[in-house]
Length: 387
Image (cartoon, rainbow, N blue to C red; front, side, top):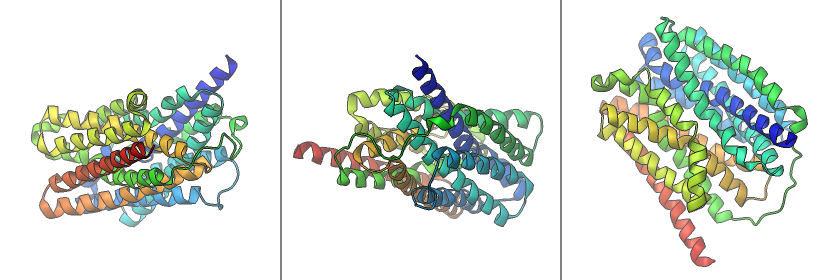
């Protein structure tokens, strides 16, 4: 009973860590973007550049997390990443300079990758080692929880006439306070030993497909995830959704890992991973083909309902297929994901400026997700035929 309680608190600490680093440090940029575009007269290309700076840092952070330059306690690196995330988030409200804002988003990306890689390696490894893997969805629910909380913070502060600068400062303050919660819940004596575990058979071909498809996922989701609130503001027929659209994304994301884990019991882990790609592709097409209140709500539900489902299933599947340190496997997947994210906002912003809408880049993003799903389905079919 004591072990079960400790593992629940550990998963809760993982939830809080991801909520801070991902929900606030990374994704609060989306609901704040329309106000920043207005206040700083940003073009879609500039907005996309700021997003890509964050994702460049995210990719660099993932690669660094897997390197020998960051030895030692996973908990210490996780807490350091959370501190850096909170500081860079708050500092976004202190500058008008594109250079400084870009550097802050870059550093914030490094911080969020460190938290995801080190926290997930620590929490998932410890939960699995103690027979409490059922708590894993609670850990990954942190991203959706953070997105929902960030939407509540932005909407509440908007009602109080707080500008985008004050919102960044508030988000940074909340993040630093949450650092204390994580410090208390993810205790030092929970740091798992490196290596260990039961050796598993290596599956290099499927692992390679997962890494490539994970990069396509990064490219596929990020254009809509970056610009969906701006899209809602720009379309008069759905403008009423602006205060709630990001909240819907977060509420859909929070239980998504639990939902896709249930799907995985029927289709297998990798099968569920591929089907989630298809669902997300449909949601992205809806954002440009059905620009109405029901259509954009469908986009929000399908986007939020798959982001962390794909993330968690992909990381768990890759870990199951590799004998390496789970930190390194997760870092490799995260780096591929980060590369897709870097290209996505740049492509989406420039294409939107050139064509006058997000229709073309959104359809390209949806196609990338379909390609990723087909790659996985094909590899599964080949593996089943060979067995």
